[in-house]
Image (tube, rainbow, N blue to C red; front, side, top):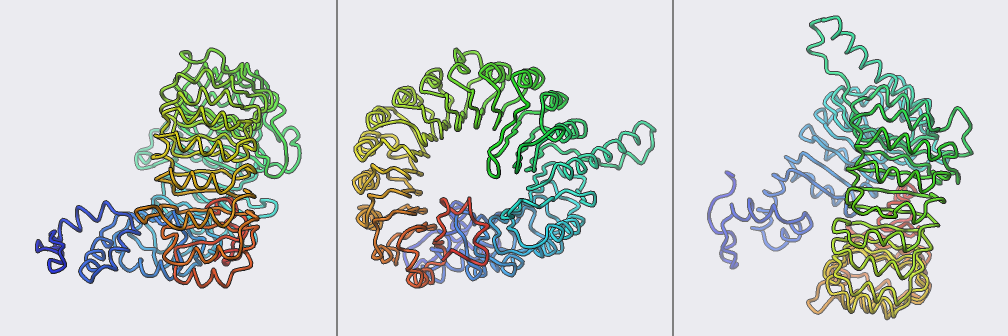
Length: 618
């Protein structure tokens, strides 16, 4: 780099490395927050950090919610960035528009609670070379206004390969992002829309088929102009609909023969009636997608507690026979499918690596009987809210050396015996036992395993007490060094003693949830604030919502220099919601810290759309 000579940097301050090595070899290995901290050390480092920022290929600000002022400090230094990812929870249009430019090829704007739909026009004008666009927008006004602005904006993205538009916060999910006028660039390969009604989805997909048939007609007529015609080659489709029905499925399978991934979720407000529902015939038609490797079909319970009542074992048999190349399967709300149907998928899909079943009341342990050695070794297994699943279902996986993620959240018949089998999974990195009927004895058994667990969720395990948490972290030698995320919310047997064991043993923990732990007091948060013996605290996200025994005095713990790495704090349902003036003063000194008063889950991933104009935040 021309701007970096080989003279020692800050030689007079005892830092003898050449500038070129610092900028080209050392700084690229550091995160953005570390670079910003270094810039405060001296004028020499400030200059070098500015040079390093100007050459950064990507900017990722998704781990915290920057303010407009903070973003304004960073933007002028990022002249060559090509990929931008920003958590926009605190931002309005102006600071976001300032970061846009023709050099940006990938733009991910997440949690856009306060951005207006005019941002679409700004992106179209300032980012003509965009390849990837991902927007998470909150409800603002009429769905038709958004549709008009979206249609106009997409006409300027001729190079777009990936488009993801999600709208949250509407009372009845009234948005229909698909329409006849929606322009999709020819290079597009990935399309994700939320939310779309089934009629709009059918129209959009039919439009894609018409374009494909036009291309084939040119070819069949041997018209030379077809050589320069690039038709749609959509490979990944994700839609959140009002209802999944046969007509939508058959439109997809007949129009998109090159489809590799299909992700469909619906949110009906009442029990669907024929012909607007999914049947065995609809599932059977998926067999015409010969390249399909990933399939997700879920009936959500967000609006109505319904299920696919017209899909039985026969439909799953037909699916498993025609889609043997599947590597990922997610099925949710298949209420009358039994063990025979689910087992056929496991045994037919020889390349299956990830298997997820939600809300399947007839799924039991028998579906997994004698499955090891018959199916491809699974990497991820999720069985969510399946009431007949017990610990015996996991016996078949005790010898697995490939399983990295196990999630049995909501399976309330899972008990201590399962922890014997789990403790043998030496490759397990993520474990969710939410709502399980486990006890302190079970956690003692788990602590004897050599588990490299990074994410652990014990939420709602009401029979676990301080004793179990203490034994788990006092004895679990490997887990002490690997665990970064822990959820012990809704556990009435947990108190300050458990927090002390976590703080004393878990060296790498960055995310901690203790919501609704009624016996956790100020003592725990004083320990967490104090840092370790080396003076460092890695904690970045802390959820203490509805911890009723904390006092107003806790607010002082979040002043500088305590909790130095904290990025998100949840205080909803506590006495701290009345200390907003104190938190305002703290925020003025810590603009990277987000304080949520509304009781959102960690990071506000579930409720960011309700924080419009900063409501419920500091």
